[in-house]
Image (cartoon, rainbow, N blue to C red; front, side):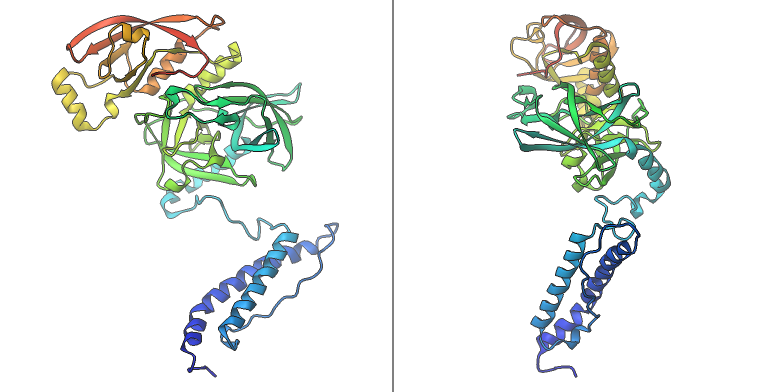
Length: 440
């Protein structure tokens, strides 16, 4: 009979009935997970049996405290089952990210196919220094040598970074530990040592060789990354479970603390952007081809494939990745607010090009009279509309090894000086280096 003298109990029992049923369903899943395993011939010896507590009506408890104690015992039993029996993914699995959402129904078939194809070349990596954990990230195979049984992995150099830049990457300060211990977490649950072959601090890329002695899948690349294109970012968490984040590729002017070779992943699920496990993982298109490498930032920055491939080819040919240092930073006119673009056009009759943001003190650019706010309309006679296009052009200049630390290249620059409203061509001499450029 219902105890009407205790209104607290009456209200509580009615409200927790559904909670109790959900708990019971979860417990049954855990039971099924372990009991089925015990029936397999040749499996490991079963653990001591745990009692199956009968389903009880919440209203059958004399007090609310008794009900709470019963639920606590039930949870302990479920926890013990989970501890001694590995959960079967066919019975219970909680994805790290959600792909099968109503918003992504139009991409479900093609996206799933792309993910299944690309996930096979995505692995996890972890680093440590003097026995202390350093970083955890993802990476992907880019080469395999059948004769030696050696695979080559590409990932982010954040994996071995020990010090972040103080304020802006353009001011330097970041430090790396090339001798850090790196473990590659293979998809079969085994691990292998990763030997650092090369890391490039400007692009934050790192190449590792791994002895796996079995063929590893390598990706195909798509060099055409279009604005607003549907893309998927892949990574693996510490359990090697796959992380999938959908978004659209976009160009954007870099912030003060970003290099200007990035595109950006704009996702409706902002909480998934910038997860450490995704760092170094691939960004793929709906055909499963790699269109970039993700480098963790709150804005979802990734290195597009056409920059990535130039970096890989340079490393393979010359053992290093060189780029000219201009001593300048920029933002693109075409990526500004339309109202600002309109005003620039009305005042200077210019609606494309790069606006100078910073000029390095004592640089060749400063000596040529280039100042903040000036507009660079072309490089080597070619109009450049975004900083990513500029980076692609700069990498294209470095088509030979530069062993001399004082190596230079000469670049023709079309500049419009806004203060004098003067247009002229100058030759900018730039030092070539594989180190991170410092502008300040």
